[in-house]
Image (cartoon, rainbow, N blue to C red):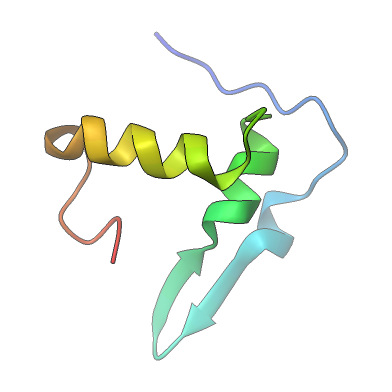
Amino acid sequence: MNEVVIKNDAKIEDMIYEIRGKYVMLDSDLAVLYECTNGTKDINKAVKRNAERFPSDFYF
């Protein structure tokens, strides 16, 4: 089982926004949570490489 361990003091609740009735997170916030060294580039690359692993409404 994979576990996400948040090492900084970021609060996930503060990174979730409601836009037009949908809850969203910004790729920049995900990059902070996952401690990506190249920021949003790493998140976007991972989604493009593994598109079948993400729900269709994950990325727009």
